[in-house]
Length: 239
Image (tube, rainbow, N blue to C red; front, side):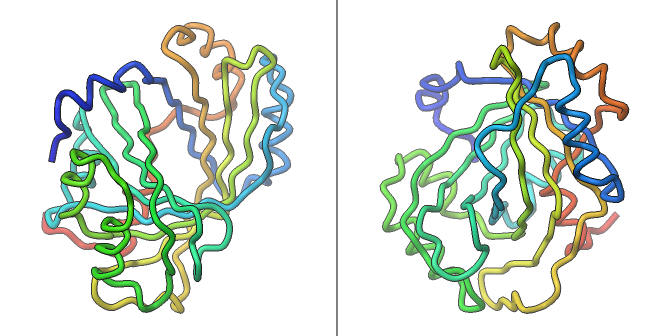
């Protein structure tokens, strides 16, 4: 399951810190935005609000899920991500592999061929996506034996500090759906998350300065994984 060493060494220098904060969805988004903009980091909204969609993948034994739950320091997460509508024609999907090593993480992104997401999604569709995409061999070998385990979507807004060293994202309206390699029914009502997520992201050299920003948040930093939260809605594991 691990990536080949040569490929890992090529991209090891892009690590960053990610501090996550879980906030009840009862807190109005306007209040969170006001909180971000009043921070002494002088954050301004950048890009534009958009809907993010993900299909997460895991092994038959849910290795990525349990590595996260068990707090394994070196772990991975694999997903297909796209923006806009969740269903029908997905024109610009990306394969993303998130790598976590202790308190820092990195994300590797690869273009995928377009596909259609509907109730007909199956293992054959997944195989065609991989077959028609020009993925590096070590990446292809890593993901081709994985299975889809979760579909989720949420709205995200982006904020950048005045010195452009810190980024904050607000994720809300988080929804989870079950997805499988064989039979799917996305017409069922999705499961909503009862929380929103605030995330502060920055480079390794700015960890000390990040305390000034985070200390102004009226909520505590917490471990939060949308993947784990979503899987918990649909899977029951033995004690």
